[in-house]
Length: 288
Image 1 (cartoon, rainbow, N blue to C red):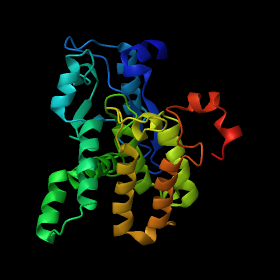
Image 2 (image 1 turned 45 degrees about the vertical axis):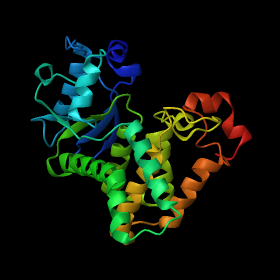
Image 3 (image 1 turned 90 degrees about the horizontal axis):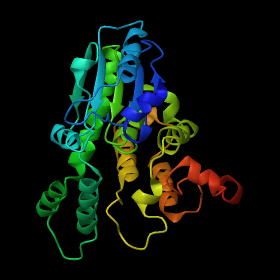
């Protein structure tokens, strides 16, 4: 059944359970987008799997939520390429919501504008500076991600309903959302060891493409480079600033993580997948 389901999900990334709420027992699962296309192709195995997520929830089996991180127009555009999003008419008691989070290309452009603003040499008054900051849309993107994480938290904690989270391939926006939701829900992930394990679980194990997104080993700036992980760390910093006493670590810890993200001192953030790191023997040849 999983083989059939893998053929129905982009890059074979089928739904995987990453968190179970300790009180409500509601589930957070993550995956890649379905390959429904314009014809809204079906996969019985996928429909059964998501229906099972709903049924096994002892607190609320009235519905299961499908959270698509993308803007709806982008998801519709993917349908034309044979991908897309779930047709809720085929999923029993499923509700779909779109979070409107922009893709890696918009994030890259936003970061470039923000960096240019921060490195500007000429005198600029604060009104103009804040205008240019708003025009970069960096904080707008941060807000959209935090709102998405908030919606996931409300789903599993307040509504006690299970949910599936995905974007396109399930390794960028999906990782941001599931990580932030767990960070807020579970105090363990707000410790230094817990936060490291959260990154290991949601980013490294699920194949976030650090080499492509950060540009390790690439002299040129290609169109797959994007500060998705940096954006996630900024989201964590925004939460940390509001409730610092709920965290074991400070902003210096987050800055240290970003420093080592780029300096390649450790093998943790090298390559695009766990398989590539294993083949390169990162654990034997580097501290990681």
